[in-house]
Every structure is written in structure tokens, then in C-alpha cells.
Length: 539
Image 1 (cartoon, rainbow, N blue to C red):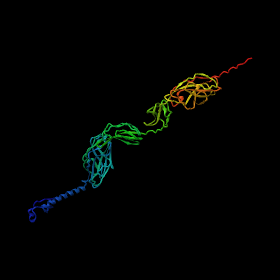
Image 2: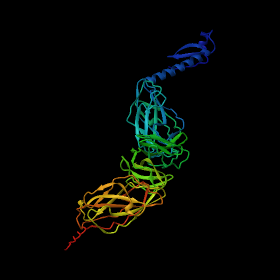
Image 3: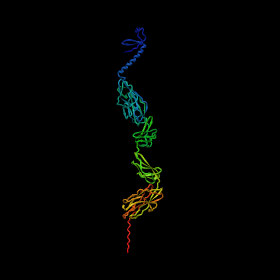
């Protein structure tokens, strides 16, 4: 088809068109000319024809498949800080659409990931897809690059189907940033082109380089101070951290605890817990931790036994506790005392004292206590009053085998029992009884008996009088005591009896006991009195 534009007609045609305008537009086809319109109308028609021809050409090429593409475009993410120790941090995003009248697929995508980041900053790069929604979500994970090296990150092994003429398809590259990532290292996603993704159609378009994403990892040193364990109800020394400006907290595990702003921990319930120290900078937090064990306090029974008050210098009966494995101790108050491993306390100065029994388990100690009063008591001082060796006769009464003195001081004293040990060859039948006497003067004949008679039993050995009511031993006075025996009428001659020394441990008194032991009594030998000869009268 030829288009000819004629500004003027020939002379031959001019006469045939006497009424036509001077300027005309003719289409010429196969040597035939057709007059279309006058000149102004021809310009308008020409423009319409050109537009029509262009549209027709586009339709023809579309039917041949030349304009059906998978199109890459930018989906720019703002520059941002990305915290160390976090996952799925969006580093870059692109939008891939389809201009095809049928479905298309995308099967690979790569990005030249620039910046100052190093391999140790990232544990994973991931590729997510959110279809036509331009909001990041982790619902559809396409691919993961584990322990990535620096440089281009290539995601493969996935298939995303784009619908016919799908206007948008959003792809997201994220990073899992390690807790040890270097502060201020950066990710700078590279620009992308048609060679950076694979689709089932012709690729077109491009995306610009992404904005810088900066790793923030605030400086935070390791936790110091404190303690590895704490008892329920007790506190640790303060935990410390060389990095200032942080915040202390507790994460309860099987146990629980509290912590002050100064790092002092108090155990609440037994088990494990974690001490945290968090430092925040530019919206990112670096937390250091320390393990803590909270130990239970041992359960300890109340103290029993013992006796109170006790005289200064005297001992109590043993204190007791039903919980084994503990340790006895005393805490001085206005007075003082000592205590043995077996729980026997001895007053050392008058006043109040606390008896302690402590049981320790896993470093935690529970202590039970009992009050003890130490009185300034009278003192009885034991001394010897020697019994010399002698002969005793059958049927002899009140024969002394031991004697001692007690001097009372400070205040009036008392004595409620005496023990002694006999020696010698005597037999039980040689002795009928033992007696205890006392007097303020050293004369046995005028002495007063204490308690009741002690019947003879067995041979030599330890024995004790029955407890008796104490006489008043006036302070400043010395009293004399005798242990005597009554010899039977049938006692065997040459048999012997004596008494060992008497010690303060043989005396029962609430007074403080001092002095002693005495000397042993001299040996008493049973000797029969010879018969007197009869006198004969002679006449």
C-alpha cells in the first residue's frame, strides 16, 4: 500500500474538478486516484491512521510471544540497625511479576551481598515469599544458606508459581545474626538484573541496590563477682560487670531468686536460675548470663536435753538434737560457756549464753538455739583429810576408811551425793554396812550421818551412797566428811579394806567444784583380838 500526498492536482484534472479546492489528498492504488478530502481533514485522518497501524503491529507481535515477560523490580527496604543474636532480619526484598497470560515459575534467585560483614556474623541467610502481600512473614520459607561465606548468596531448590498476569510477587532475603557478630558490620545488598533469577519465561527488569543494614552488638563483658550458689533466704555477694549502664535481672528455672539493682541475689526457692546483665544501645541489647544454684536450707529438730541454769565452772548434762551430723557451739551474751562435741556445756562466766546446734547441707546451714544461764554459784573446794593405815577388829563400828574436807566459798554451798571405790581383800561378809558422816570440826565422834546406810554388797569396787538432802555448807566454813564401815563379828582376820582417792567427779553438787583429788585412805587390816587368859586361884 502506497500513500501519496499531492499538494496540487494536474491541469487535466483541474477542469474536471472546477468546484474542488485547490489542495487535495489522494490515495493512489493501481494507478487509480481517489480524492479523500480537502487538506485540513487529510492531516487528521493521517494521524488516526498512524495510531491504528502501531496498535495493529503491537497486536501482531503479542500473538507471536515477544512481550510476555517475568519482570524484576525493586522493593526497597529502609536502612536499619539489625541486632546481634536475632533471627530473620530482613536484609533485602525484590518484587517479581508476570505479564504472561499463563502461569510462570521462579526457581532460583541470587544477590551479590556486599558490606563489611564476615562469615562469623551470620549463621543463615534465608529466602521467604509472601506472594502479593508486601509485608514480611515467615510463613513460606523457600531456601536456606547455612554458614554462608561472604559474596554472592544463591538460593536454589525451590519453585514459586506466578499466576497469569500477576502484578506482584514479593521475595525477602533475611539473616540470622549471631550473638557474637561484630558491632557496626554492615550488609549492602547488590543491584539485581535478569541474570540474578531463573524463571520459565523471558526475564526483564531490574532492582536497585539495597540500603545499608547495620549490625548492632553493644559491648558487654562477662559477669563477675557474686556466687555460683545461694541458700534459700540468704544473699550472695554482689554480681559485677565491667560494662556500665546495664540492668540486672533473674530468669527463674527449676528454682527462683531475686536481684537488686546493685547485683545482690537472694535465693527464693530451691533449684536453678540464671543471672542476666543486659546492656542496650541503638535499640539492641547484649545480655551476659551466669548460672546460679539455689540450695534449700536443711531441716533441723529443736534442741533437747541439757540443763539450765549452770554454775560458773560447772557442767550441764548433755544437750541433744534429733538431727544428726550437726556441730555444737556457744555464743556469749552477758556470760560465757564452753561446750563439747557431745553437747556438754560448762559455764565460764556468769550471765546469759546461747547454745547453738548447726547442720550444714550443700553449703547451707540451719542453726537451732537454746538459752543457758550461767550463775555465780558457791564453790566447794575438795581437800584431803588423811586416814592412816590401822587395824580394825571384828564387830568394830564406824571404822573410817576415807576422809576429805570441803571448804565453801562465794556463797552457801551444797552436797547431795558421794561416790567412792573400795580396795582390799575383804569379802562381803566382812563388812555389814557403809556410812557417810560430816562435821564442822575434824572430830568423827561428834559427826552427823548424811543419808542412809549403804549395805555391804560384793567385794572391792565402785559404789555410791543414795542421794540425800544436802546440809547447808556455809560460805567461809570448812566441813569434814568420813566414810566408815561396820565390821562383822565374823570378819576374817588379815583381810583388808581401803578407799581410793576421792575426786570432784565423785561429788554431786550444784556448787562449783574445785580442788582434789584426795589421797587414798590407808589400808585397814582386820585383826582378831586375842583371848585373855583365865586366872586360876590356888589354895
